Image (cartoon, rainbow, N blue to C red; front, side, top):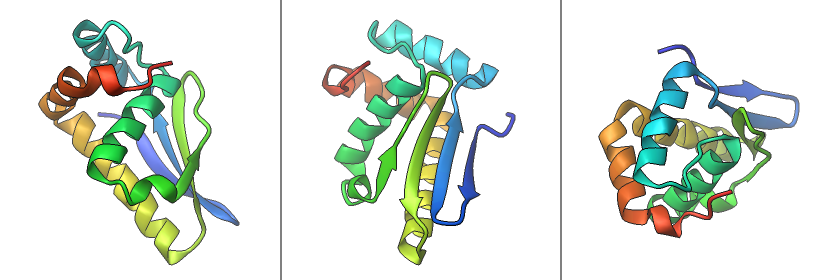
Length: 119
């Protein structure tokens, strides 16, 4: 799979960028849409899904960053600190875990899809 998520280090932040317009990610999005008709997986809906997932499984992480997604990408911004670097890495690992274990992602949307604040 092409590089679909990365951490970019800036002067004052660590930015996690998840490129959701990647062909493989788009294919996963189509499968999610088949599970839940509200799951049109643009950047905003990936943000909604990840927010719900983090709330349930990594609640401490939820307060450590801000998001500014667009249609073709999910973006999260962390303070430039040791804690920010660790939190950014945790988010990257969550994204990779869900994308590389599609069954886990599909099961989450099947179980909690009605709780996700879809765009």
